[in-house]
Image (tube, rainbow, N blue to C red; front, side, top):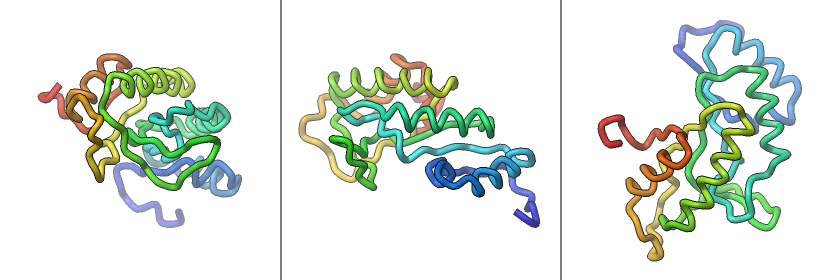
Length: 157
């Protein structure tokens, strides 16, 4: 904060700033000097329970305040039954999962008023119920939602 090193941009986890007004003031100050990339770890776009709309509204307030160059999060789920699990859990690559994630991702993009970059899925195991590859799933997700995806290059789309 004090020295303002010459870096190209800063990536933050918004959840670290939502409950801390002082930290949010510092972030707002930094956003005047640096492009900010916001990487959420709490949206849980793959949760079968849906998106936490109160959390999405808090994110929108932060995004409106710092005007980030990117808004991103992982293709994963992390909440069930109102309980937040402090992990990014994998999803099966199926048509049903694609429908759920695409619907929720559209809600997120509408709620944030901007494109959402889906980062590489959290995959430390393969689920036997998958009916498509990761690349097929991500391609279909991009086509269904017009999101961006950091797991694919322009030549692989």
